[in-house]
Structure formats: C-alpha cells, structure tokens
Amino acid sequence: MRISTTIFLTDETITPVRLARELEQRGFGGLYLPEHTHIPVARNTPYPAGGELPREYGRTLDPFVALGQAAAVTERLTLGTGVTLIAQHDPIALAKQIATLDHLSGGRFTLGVGFGWNREEAADHGVDWRTRRDLGRDRLDLMRALWAPKPTAQEGEFGHSVSPSQAWPKPTGGAPRILLGGAAGPRLFAQIAAQTDGWMPIGGRGLTESLPVLKETWEKAGRDPKTLQLVPYAVHPSPGKLAHYTELGCEEVVLQLPPADEAEVLRTLDGYAQYL
Image 1 (tube, rainbow, N blue to C red):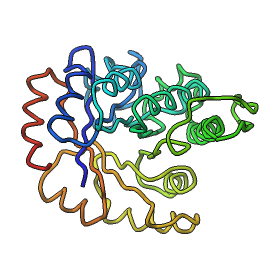
Image 2: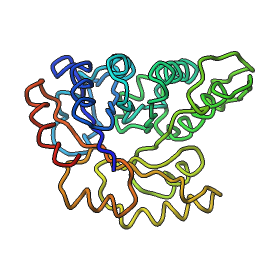
Image 3: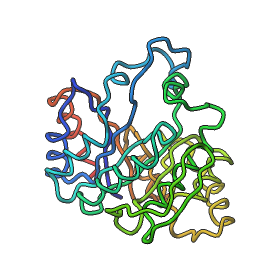
Image 4: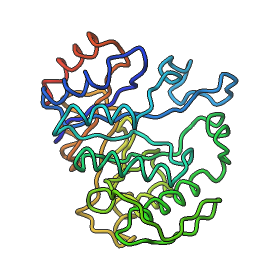
C-alpha cells in the first residue's frame, strides 16, 4: 500500500519545495494539499471537527501553485488536491490549471474534489449552498469536455458552457485520476459511480460498513468492480489501522501531517517511516 501525506501548507509552515524533496527522498508516495480561498470572519458555519476553527484554515496556500513548486523539484512523488472545492471555481480556468499541472509533472496529478462545509466561503463565490453538489457535477462535466481528444461542446446548467474548443495540453490518459471526498451516503456514492475513479473518505472511519454499499452502487452503474479506488484521507496512522485498509483493498492511504515548521514536520515523517 502506497503511503502518501497531506498537510495544511501555510505562510508559517515548512515550504512546498522542502517538504516535497523530503517526501521523495524518504520514499513516501505522494503529497495532497487542501484548499480554502479565504475564511470570512463573520462565520456561522460550525467547524466540522468541533471547537474553534484552527488558525491554518485562513492561511492556506493555493494548492495548485504549491503543487507546481513540488512538481518542479521531484520526479516520482505523486501530487494531488484534498480537496479542490470544485463549486467555487470557474471550470474553464480550473480545467487549464489541472491539465497544465498534470502535463508538467508527467501525469502525476490526482484531482481530489469535494463540496465544502463553509457556507460563508462558498457564498462569497456566488455558490447557492442547496445546489452546490449539482453545480460541482456540472463543472466536472465541463472540464471533461475541455480535456476530450477532439473539440467538444458542453452545455452547463449553471451559467457556464463551452463551445467546441482547442484546449491543450491534455491530462495524461484524457483526465487525471479523480477522487470524490465526503461523508458516506447514497447521493455521494451515486456521484462517485457516475463521474469519478473512487472515494476519498476523510479520516477513513466506518469503511467496513460503507464500502459494500459503495461497491453495490458502483456495479449498478455499470462500472468494473476492479477499478474502484478507495483512498482513506487525512489519517492518523496505527499499525492496526493500516493493516485494516490493506485488507479492504486500499492501494493508497494519505497520512495527516501537522501544519507546522520544518523541524516538527520532519520529526513526524521520521515517525511515519515505520509504515513505509
């Protein structure tokens, strides 16, 4: 099982270049970065984990810029988002960012997508909270049209459409690997089966009960059961937990790093080395 990592990189943490080099030298599989464009101070949405919202949420680096730096100083390290808040993006511009990063990294990019939890952040992007999932689905379809091998039109339902266009570079294989993050449920599983390569369950809890349901949904959608990818994300590891993921057929797990300075992050990597 490949051992990857995620971290809230900020203006106060280890740098993307330093971290990426250390991860590759130590034999870790990948680096995934989260996204928050901003955190409105007047916020009514509760933090999902409870308590006060941690400082790093309002200081997060742009994941695509940071991953571009990481790509430039590595050769094997996979790169991903965990997660891109897809409803908050212009899909045409986002499709170009993704294709460019995938091309320049030699096909190493994974697009982790999600719908977010912070209503105030989404509202500043003009997102209607009630339709954010449908908006995300619509924008992913538009991006796929731009990644298609031939100029392809796509009519969006939420104000964006694309006419048949020249749009290069193309992601390796026609699209990056796409994983959808979020809590288990029929609607999420249906969207995973319809549009993506698999599930990125945050924290990795409850998979014994949820995975059979996802597999059933996947197969009913006509998808090959062998192709479903399960990538537990932001995991605080233990030997038993990782052994459980292996038994479930996970080929990759993403371990959480602290949003800290270089010394603390490297000490954590030293501790995680036992799982490589």
